[in-house]
Image (cartoon, rainbow, N blue to C red; front, top):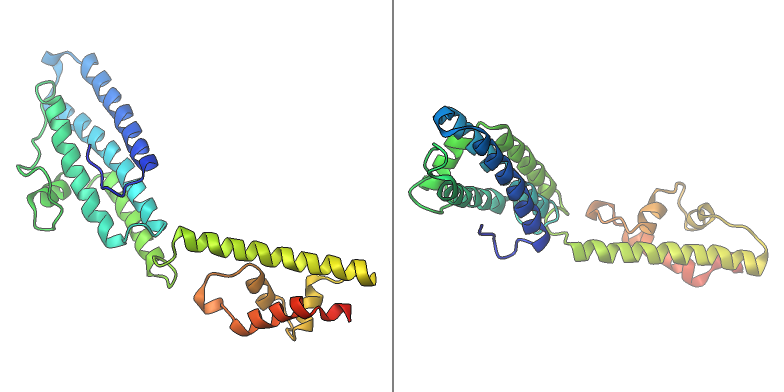
Length: 236
């Protein structure tokens, strides 16, 4: 099967695994039913189940890429339709002659809304449970990417924020330990944020965990807590 050039190897492996399982199941059903007892309706239902199982695996991986910010939401549906059309063709060529099944669109690919592949795919598979699950996952991706940090946030960004948070927590712990060793006093994180002039722990906790949400970033709090760790007022 054809995959987008930026479809990760691990995602390809999951889809290929799903295809292998679905194909073996279809072959098992086909072999267990003598040709003279097979009916078009049953063959088409089994074939549709095979196609949708593989499509669902691809759709799941595509939506995961969307949630990770690697694929924009408006790219996922066209790529899913394109994959489904290609899968339909390949499966038809593989099982034609052994199953009485419905033919795919005359064009092999095509993901535009007015394309034959798009229309036929939605008509043949759009009412299935697998398709409806895909629509729900796609909506979840759209909601995630509509947030301020949805698509712009990359894995590198998250990794950088994690490193900042780890460093801040380590610095705070080191400061508390230093105060105890040099003065014998036991201070807590509360002593730090009250020293900074805050009446609640909210801003300190946001700063310490390097809260990634733009609306919760406080430059003043960052400067204040950084200054306290640098000047170490509890040692004076």
